[in-house]
Length: 333
Ligand code: AQP
Image 1: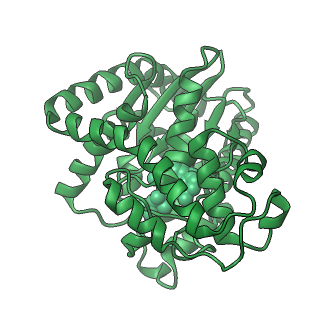
Image 2: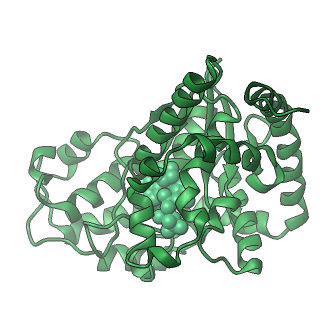
């Protein structure tokens, strides 16, 4: 049975980008009985940049609430946080010895996040993709649903698996497929159509948070940057209009429509008419989720129980795979 793994960092509140690019698609794969699904709050990845300890714990529980409120069922999927399953970090060490410096040097996320300050970045931020490869391969996952920004890291995971298999003369780790589908594989900032919507963007107006109320969502969409033209009636007409394309993509993803179907309805409208339609749709889809998140957050102990139970189930899969890896490598047990 194909096995799906994906994760999200508890590095801040969830954004609409995380929801449309990742969680909503995690739910679709969970509800497709042909897949076995494993979803993770990657707290060890989050601390590759500074996280306030109390905030990190809160964000981890809130992310778990976000998963469940969006439709992840902890009975159907394995849902847990990374640090409770130590085999992720243990396999990552092996992969640190497999991955090459040159491979990691090419990772654009490291360059973006480290910026001009590479000398002062954590070693963990540089080694992030090796830990991500371990997250995936410690389950022998075959499919990884991600947003467009994570494609390069999944390709690196494939390179690590292939090099491990080749160096040790085994056919042990699968060559995982990234699954990047839908209208919202890259949701852009509401303030700048060339930047992706991100939880760590300093401007709160650049993103819709999953915890935003109806007024905040409406205000952010009203102030979203656009151009003065009316909407086109075909996708081709959005080509050089990144902000317009972003809002149409968001609409399509929220409505589960394709972009052409949306444009056949709204083509010719001005943004003054389209933006309120988008706000109403966003509020109708997101309010039930934020309401349920708030309810779940009232009982932290219940969330902790779900995470503990998820970690136990995860370890039933990870312990034998790590044991076999150590044996292949020649580590005496
Ligand atoms: N803007 C986006 N559009 C579509 N998908 C997105 N994802 C993130 N932003 C967008 C997808 O969400 C998943 C989890 O991402 P992550 O938390 O591991 O880290 P990230 O990609 O670095 O996301 P952020 O929000 O930008 O976090 P920070 O600001 O902490 O770096 C991934 O599948 C990602 O593709």
